[in-house]
Each structure stands twice: as C-alpha cells, then as structure tokens.
Length: 501
Length: 94
Image (cartoon, rainbow over all chains, first blue to last red; front, side, top):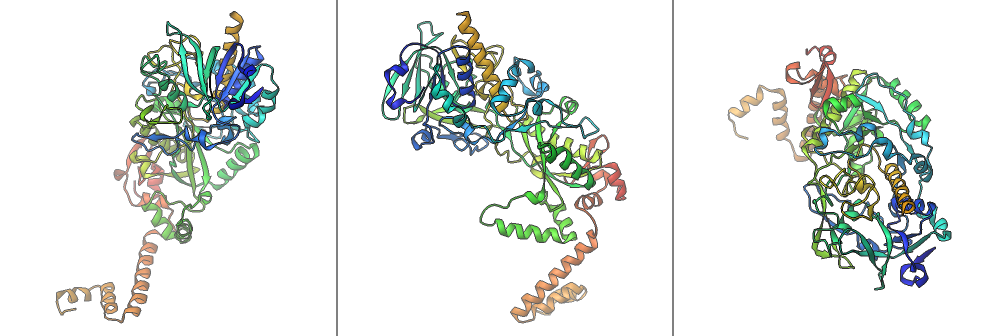
C-alpha cells in the first residue's frame, strides 16, 4: 500500500506494526522489504513526496561550521521516495578485509564485526543493485609487480538502480508494507524506564499529525539526518537519544576527492595495454588501490586511485575557454611546456595523465554533526550544523599515498609522477564525493559508538539505525553496496527477533 | 634619460642596449619591438636551458641528489617529482 500521509485513510495506520522504517532510500527500502519477506508487517515512512518538493528540501538546510567549508550539505542529499538513489552514480565495490582490522591509524576501535559478517547478505545486495556478484568478488588481474599498489575490483549498476521507480509497484501491491509519503517523524516516545520506544509522532506539511505504534523502529534518513534526528529527539533524553556517551553525530566521514598530481608515461605501450585490457574491455576502468603491505607498514588509509588522460580535464567557468587556449599554447611548445610544468605542479598537458581518488577519511571525533537551536525547520526542529574536519593523519595519508603511487610508477618504469604542491604541503582542497558516513557508528560498546553490531542503538531495546551512518570506518570505496548489505542483515536480524517473540 | 653611469652600464649589455633604443622610439613601435624582443629573449633562454627535456628531466637536471628529499628505497622527491637514483644519474646529477 502506498498513500499520501496528508490524505491517508484511518485503515492505513490501524493495528500494530512489527516495525516502522523511517526513510525510503536504499537502506530503508532494503530493510522494509526484508522484514516483509520474513512475514513482518511494516510501516514505511517517507518524509518527502514521491518527487522532490521545495518544502521537503527546505528541511535539509544546514550550515558548515568546521575548519573545512563543506559545500555539499544540501546538494548531496535527496528527500523523496527512493532517497539518494535518485542521483546515485552506480559504482559498487567491497571494502577490503584490512578495513575491518583494528588499525592504529583509526585512533579508536574499528568495526566490531568481521568482513564476512558485514557481507553475509552480499548476493542479495548485488541482486538489488543489479550487479553481478562476481564483478566485485573476482580479483582484478594483477598488473603491478610489487606490493605498493593493486588493481581495484569494482563494477557499475547499469542502468543505475533507482529504488523509487524499481520498487514502487511492489510496495503499492504489498500486503505487508504500508508506505506513507509526506510523513515526517518528529518525535519518539520512550517508556517509563527510558529503554524502549512505544510510539512515534508523525507530521505532514499541511499540519496533519498522528501518533503511530510499532514494536521496533528503524531510522534510515542518511548519515547527516540520522544524527540530527537522534540529537533532536530529546524530549526525554536532554542530550539526545542514544547519546549518553556523546557519540551521536561524531566521526562524520566523507571520502576525499583530491587530484594527487600528474604523471608522464615513460612506457606508452603499457598504458595503452592497461587501459584496453584492464579498463575498457572489462568495463571496470582501471583504478589502483594501495597494497596491503604498504598500508600496514606506512600506516596508510585506504583509497581508490583513478587515472585519466589530461585531455579529459574540463575548463569550467567564464574564463574556462581562455584557460584552455593558454594551456594548449603552453603545451604546444616543448621548451615552454617543460619550463612551465617544472614551475607549476598544477599544469598538465595532452600526453600527460592526472590522478584522482576516493580516499579514506579516518574516523575523527571532532568531525561531527550537531544541531543549531537558533535555526529551526518547518517542524520546529533545530537545523543541522556540520563541523567537517581533516586531521593530520588524513594529510599524512594523502601525501603518503601519492608517494606510494609515484614510487610504483617509477619502480616499474611506466611513468614518472609529480605530486601536487598542495598535497605535499597538506593544504589540498579535499573536495567531496557525497559519501556521508559514521555519525551513529557501530561499536562493541557505548564507549566507542552509538549502535551495537546489530545496528541497535545502545540503551534502547527496539531502535535501530540503517544506512552508512553505522559505518565504523569509511574504507576507500563507494559505500552503497556495503550499506545495502548491512541493511539486509539488519532486516534479517529483526526477522529473527520477530520469530523469537 | 640623463647622461649618467646608468647609460654606460647599459652599453655593456646588448639586451640593455636594445631596451635603451626601444625606449627612445615612438610608443606604438616601442610596444611592438619591445614585445618582440622580450619574446625572442625568453624563447632563447628556454630553448638553451630545456630543449628536448621533459618536465621531470628538467626537475632532475636542476638539482643534485643532495638537494632532493630522500624518500628511501632509492627514491627521491625533486620539485614534487618522485624519481629514482637512476633518473638522477642519467641526468649526470648523482
């Protein structure tokens, strides 16, 4: 059943639900479908409409207050049926086993679950995202003769899975899932002991309001909003729900998007072969990742390092065409090109290659989501504030990864790489990938996080968090496949709870 | 321009002498010839110093191993370029 909350019938909300899932993005829909498949009655709530609306988008507004000005607070997020899958790029890859190790560079415990536990529902997640499991589990051909770098395995969801269009009909026809859109959860009521949610207040944009009941609640609004929600649900818990140890909103993680530098091939045939056989022929592109030995010995975070010809550089903005002419002129005269490039690390010419990446942002308590009581949304809830922080350890990872990559090129004599001055100096613009993670991190105890290994909020028996907010660390790959796998695992856990009574 | 020691110094430098002569010309000619002279001079310097060299070869040729940051394992950081000891030797700078 699928209805507008503003006009929903009384029947739609009558009776008790086994679980109320708030959020219809990849995590929310995956949990809801899984619980329904296990025989549970599910109330699925979407705060936005079936398509984007101005009134819904307004709720996402927030402010960047950290050392790094994060300009993607609103841009990255979608608030309508299907969630951020509406603009997902479709790239899928698995975290590495090393990401699940307790590594000193994290400065805190890492994941409390193993790689195998995290991906216990991998096959089902791959089916949901319309990818072949073998494409992410089969190691790419090793083209590098040393342990510095390894070829990455990833694939793309093609055409990209959009959860709204893909699952709308199924949810409309479902006898187990009742989905209401324009339904904003604004409060959760705890029992007298303060350990169990007994009801949720839901409001529409037209002033309509209802109280709903369910045995369990799953919050899957995305990493930024999950934290804002818990911090704002403080009618009975002044510091926020699940925030007794001050972890809600902390360890906000993104992936850095940095151009590490440019390189000049010294073995053109190698690059042609690399692109043709390892890249286009397999539809994988040709990214590299740091070797495990290098990560361990140098204390590096993880990353996916991509390479593309400098001819693919775009010159944007009003002066873009002028800058392109200037670049082309400089590059067309060999001595001028050599002189210019030796003096400016940012100049790349046709024939050169440039490097980009998805680079791990190490968990950092100071990088955090908070709320601003002086700015409120249409429902009276304090708006989001984000302090996005990059640590010295992150800067070390950037520099060291660039050096390892450059060493790999020189060692195999396929290229020489020039690392950008700002990467070497630790002043690089870290960019964004819209991979928001870690604000309700998973931990073995409340001393280091917000949810337990089953995604249950510490201290509340029937409240769970879904999505990448539960990530303990961010790894060096796109998060969607992992968050869907974890959502399915959560759905199964709830199914087990229902069965056991 | 006054008749001072500055003029005497310029006479010792061909480039400076050209500059002096251009300064005495009418404005439009001054611009054209001055610009042309500067372009030729820059091109000559570049051609003399970097002909046939890639950017990383230039970086290596401008430094000695002592002036490079030793990254360990036989690698050096030179103007941002990560080069091998063999690269530096090939440039006659090791």
